[in-house]
Image 1 (cartoon, helix red, strand yellow):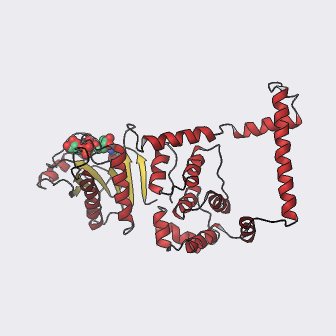
Image 2 (cartoon, rainbow, N blue to C red; image 1 turned 180 degrees about the vertical axis):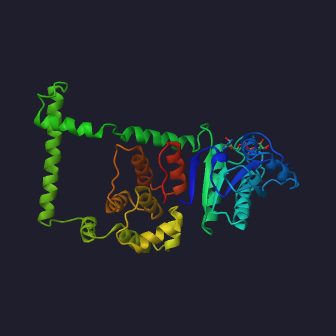
Image 3 (tube, protein in one colour; image 1 turned 30 degrees about the vertical axis):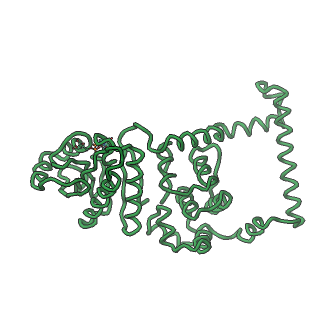
Length: 353
Ligand code: AR6
């Protein structure tokens, strides 16, 4: 996944470069700056003294000394003054300038803290959005692995409204004991008397519900058997029954008029992984990869389920991850950055590959 959010202490990140949220003097301070100087040792401060400070929105590079990272890129974020003083542009410039230095120094993996989101007061959700948007624009032109490192559990990283909407969608749909419910239904059908904890009326209700499900399935099977007025989507599905995941993906890319690169970049998928999928007709992707492609291709929820099925997966209501994905896809919200921010907030795996 070229761009991902992780929860960690940035001084522990084993990357080519980590980025420091410094001040104009570059002579150390509190927050992440203090942590980086402590972990790197006094040689870092000695090198910083030779740099002559740094302007806001710009960046300078040093060695990493005792850090696992080879380099430290020092950048100076803007102090938040309400948002009307060019803060967004200056913050975006911090990410762009740091990445430019990373490229010049041959870095392939870079980790950023949320610049300006501590002492400098930039609202966290907005600071994360600037970080993600700027890094994802950069990745349209470059191959690199970028980590956005979030340290503490503090204010929300997504808007309160979106968080509340998704939490209630998850609460309404989450079935914690999915299998147990099915077992209960079966007991209702075949062994109500053995399950003494289940009242007779509930057992009867379950039996009726199961019978209705069964009858509905039988009717559908029968109408399919006689070829009666099959919906076009079903006919298409039957025609494409032998299509593999890889074939379906390439077909959908063509149908949507995208180039391969537009699709895999939008999906937050690494170019090498995409080539593997392209060249192996029977490639078995991970679920997070399939979902990323479904979002990049802006598939409907049915098409998404279909694509997942090709890779041997399904969306279920006993998984919070699946319900969150269902929320976004069924609401036609396909912004992978936003989906990943929400997944991160709910401690779920991120999508991409
Ligand atoms: N790893 C990852 N992130 C961290 C760590 C860590 N070890 N420690 C803190 N953060 P801040 P700023 C997060 O205040 O707002 C310094 O004194 C933190 O939770 O370090 O750009 C400089 O010298 C927050 O989300 O940087 C400047 O004077 C983010 O890093 C001033 O602070 C940035 O918080 C810069 O302020």
